[in-house]
Picture 1 (cartoon, rainbow, N blue to C red):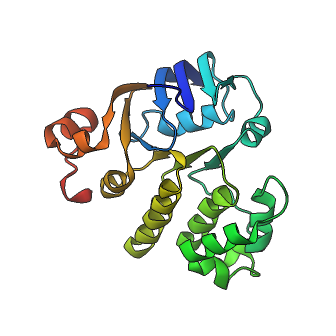
Picture 2: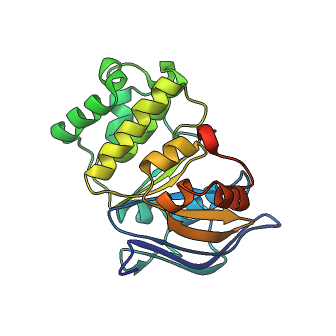
Length: 241
């Protein structure tokens, strides 16, 4: 693959005494959505957190947009153009929705056109703009979490399970917003357990097992091969479960 925006080479990460990542090799191409799939506990979240510098890689190399970021601190990685949406949402409940968004804007100001685009994608954020984020529903908090990563154009978005635990109608809203981000030419690395969402959004797939990437290919290839899904992830994904 020519000039991926993100490349992981032999990345190993330990958490306490546990060897979580055991040599992850992964290329994330520009302008595409790469799905990171696999059963629970195989290292998907740790991979995202290692890219962001929350966990320090013990071995291997992470290259972002041509620069080695393996040893950079998290704020520097964020400033270099990576937006991260953690699974636990990372919003400030006692601040207003607007204040949460302003904090997320690296430049400290919100572009009105970008804000209006986010309001179109997530109408509840317009409704509750001046209200405390802590009073939002779970689905609305998840919308805010993703909107915070989208408030400025980033070179790469890392998004961890954006539809987990959400009602179907909110999953649809979330998927539509992510599709708009994709259509705007964004590069996205997305961890997602909902295979219907993964199939709808993904261009490429990397499947993890036991701290390594064990298969990479086109989403269409994986989506069209139930036997391959069964072999790689040990579950039948027909019907979108």
